[in-house]
Image (cartoon, rainbow, N blue to C red; front, side, top):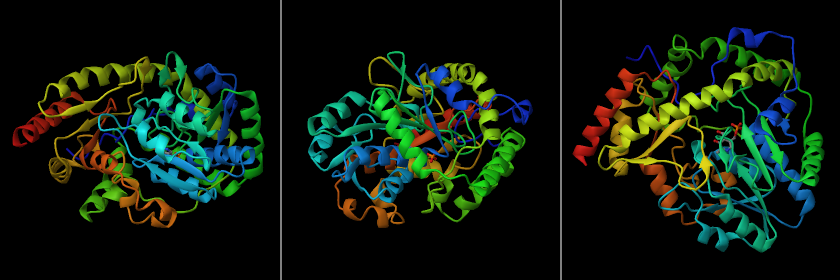
Length: 407
Ligand SMILES: Cc1ncc(COP(=O)(O)O)c(C=O)c1O
């Protein structure tokens, strides 16, 4: 089975015609129209977009030094906060959805808080209202981490638009991709201006990075297809798993260098062309997700994580499942991760439990985050790529039925 390896998330495949070197490079304009917002700002990654957002807010509130983030999120978020000279504070999650606990949010917020980051994990829409209420009570800002949710909407508006600021990632696997890329948005014109100034101050023109990213995007265009994915994704995955290195297998092994540069014109052109297909692709993914979630939800003891906040319409790069125990989840992954059934982990650990990020979490290591640890222990993602075909999905269902019976 391993020669056909579905990707861990449903990225938008590129067409060779997207690679044409000429044409419209106004990706910011195209994305703003697609999102139906007045303007967006491009950065070279979601992480660097977050750093620009923090720099902009820091100029507005220089005395504030803390940023509240979910205790179960991408480690890059903690790195970005720390590299911005700010202290990450970790908020535990709710028991019933992977969203920050409002009571703990309120307890963590103070006159030191610069920003709170409600996070739309894996396309599931978070409750931004709760974060806004806590932020407003102490004069802090809300940055919506929409890195994994480009295309998700709340009452018809894009995620990222309810908070003061929001950002999307255009990294591989996030849907639309420039291999690495980031998008910032803000409802208020004054905050858009603050973002623009902070972005200009931080960004340099780096030909080296742009060459590298352009080659990587070319590689993506060539290999992100059923015939190429085993080489590009399956083999490195199996090597990491054979070493027992789940952090590398999940792609959670980040270094400290966060490049800051402009997103080059060729990559913007590629994305402008691909963007024309994103809406149709996401509609197809939503249909597949709903059909498959209904089948997964019929398995006793298996919890399918859907959109629990009213009025929201998430995106479906993966289907999120929570198993009855951490031991069952680990046994499932030990037996079947890397076997072409679309299994993966959003993130391996709650942030304090990686060890390798202790240098940026010094002040947060002791924070008690039992729910985040429980989510990290029992969660598993199933790729919603159309390349996880019916035969493989049916096999996965059978395996999950056995796991449920054993529980
Ligand atoms: C929740 C979350 N926030 C932020 C980021 C950072 O985005 P990027 O990879 O584009 O730097 C990611 C990336 O995976 C993420 O998953």
